[in-house]
Structure formats: structure tokens, C-alpha cells
Image 1 (cartoon, one colour):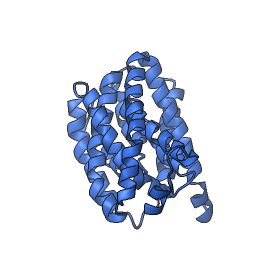
Image 2 (image 1 turned 30 degrees about the vertical axis):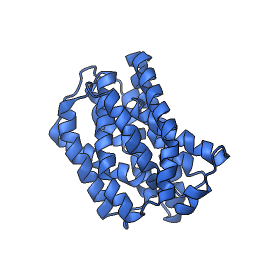
Image 3 (image 1 turned 45 degrees about the vertical axis):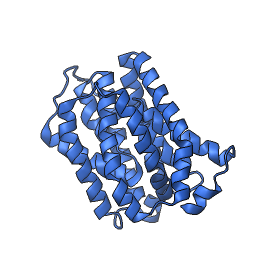
Image 4 (image 1 turned 90 degrees about the vertical axis):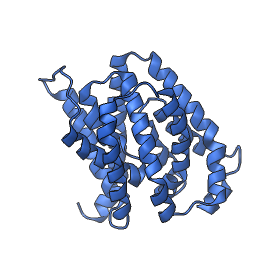
Length: 261
């Protein structure tokens, strides 16, 4: 990771690619869930996905600070009480199984889950407008999966959205709950990530250089969240979830071929 961080020259195409990834992280922290999941695939065009995930963690954490401040009064306390312990448990499971579970396998399963959820939301003829309640059993289940997939590849959004979208939270409460939850989950990943691939001074310096792009993305995400009508906001969330889920499945195709699935 040190060589990669040192090879990023200010103003180079690689630098702007990393800035784009940092802005995607910021957009997700500003209230546009799903954009953060695009960051690792963008950086994976030029570096290993594992290295990209580790390199991006400081960007996630630093932009979390801005996102939490923006949504400090808009969140679902009940959901956070359920999801935060579950998310941390998922991170610990990811750490314990890091040497056994491949990123491609997780990408495939989460991608299928997201696609199935969106198709069910759009195609079922008896859709109900009644909001579901936040329940401990479902929240612990989906929160743990979300923490696990977030640990593997910063892909915690699909399981989280499967649990929260049916609750029909207001867009600001939905965005705030998302931001605060993953701020805690990202902090929980610091020690495991550092244990798996220790950070270098060059990598941390690169994170600081990319921080303005992440902050700009966070503010832009908050601005757009405030101005997009609620109906279109959640449709956009679902479409983003669907497209990202397809991308996750496509990323896993080489793994499927290798294992003759």
C-alpha cells in the first residue's frame, strides 16, 4: 500500500480517479446511500480491491465526522439502538473470517439480495403503503450482515436498505440514521483493518490530501437530499441499490466461473 500511496502524483489521472472515489464516499455521507459503494470499484480499476478498501477507510471516517454533524438531529434512535451493536458484531465476524471468506463470494450474495429486494418492491401487485416497524430480530439480522459486508468491501448499504426502506422513514431521518450507523461501523473497522494491512505514513498523507473531495461530496449530498422530493429520493435510492447490486454480481462472475457454478 505504501508504493501505491507514494505513486499518486497531484494532478495526475490517478489522483483525479482517487478524488472521484473520495467524492463518492462524501456523497453517501451527505445522505445519498449507495454512492459510497462505488468508491471501491472505481479505485479497483487501478489497484487491488482489498488495498482500495483499506486505503479508503480513513476517508470514510473523516467524512463521517461531517456527515454526523449535518444529521446530528435527524435520525431514528430505535433503529440505531438495534443496528449499531449488530453492525459491530458483523465487523467482528468479518475480521474473524477474513482468511476464509472471499470478497467475490460476498459480492455475489449481496448483489443477488439487492436485486431480489428491488424487483420485489417494484413488481409485486399487492404493495402496501403501510410502514413496517423496526423490530429487534430483523434489525439484528440485517445489521449483522450489513456490518459484515461493510467490513469486506464497504458494501453495507444493501442489507441495511432491505431492513430500513420498508419502514418508510422520512428522507432526512433515513439519511441521518444511515450516516450515524456507518460512522460507528467504520470506527469499528480501524483495528481489524490495521491488523490485516498496516497503514503507512504515505497512505495516511494521501487520505488527508483526498479529504477536501470527500467533504465537498458530503456537503453536495446534503444539499441534494434537502431538495429532491421524497418520492424521487427513495426511488433514486432503490435504483442505485439495483444498479450497484448488478455491479456486485458482475464483479463476482470470475469467481463463479473458477468454481464452476
